Image 1 (cartoon, rainbow, N blue to C red):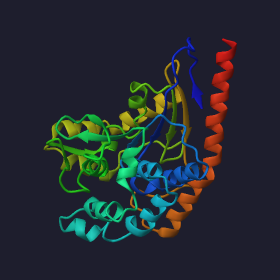
Image 2: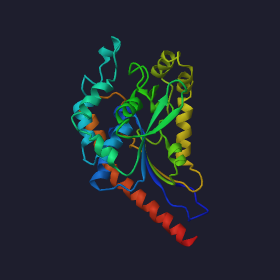
Image 3: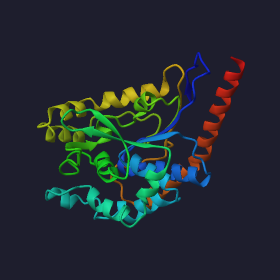
Image 4: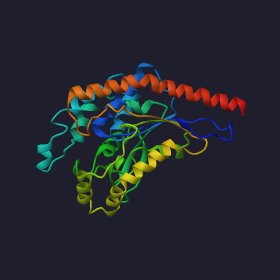
Length: 301
């Protein structure tokens, strides 16, 4: 945990849970959030997620343990969801439309229950024409297009979902770990759930270079894709060196977690899910310890 001391103890404490996305790697946060549900741990004032992290937050707010695990096991590993041959023939590599029909319409995730919570859920997307992150408060009216847009990785999902008449794409393109937005929204105590181990450094891969080339007709989006490594590093630096008055706990998968973005091996995904579950008690203890530490500092100041 990294904490910067506050000069005042009169301001109310606002808490937030931020969940990074990364396709199938998000099975770790699925297990962690289920561990939170099993412990009835919901101390947060608002939630902020991106891509698959937003899906996992919806399952958490749905309130039924193992919802995310069922989606990973039953749908995310299906050839209907991830299909290379379909992609090579001009279709989606990741068919979010198919996932939406089954994950939502079969009531694995009760969207009404998600939206009834008094604690707001914000989802990050990227504006294609401007290349900037947009954070949208999820409501019953916008939940489907917002969740789809947040996970619609450019090129892998053909075309761009529309929100209020504007083309949007994966939120991770412009802000994969939206901790700065959580601070802007007023959070002073934040837990960030990562999809990679603590020592991971993002690299520019051939796949990402080709993705940028494919997006060259959208200059602002192309520019944002070109800055993705620096944007990611800026978020990590903020997590580990928060501004004065802000306390941040970073929860990362262990070094043994090695699931790839498009992994469909059910056994490996189940192991990653259980790593998340196993990490939940320690994450809860870190949160409670930080709360006690802050209370002691306030009493002695």
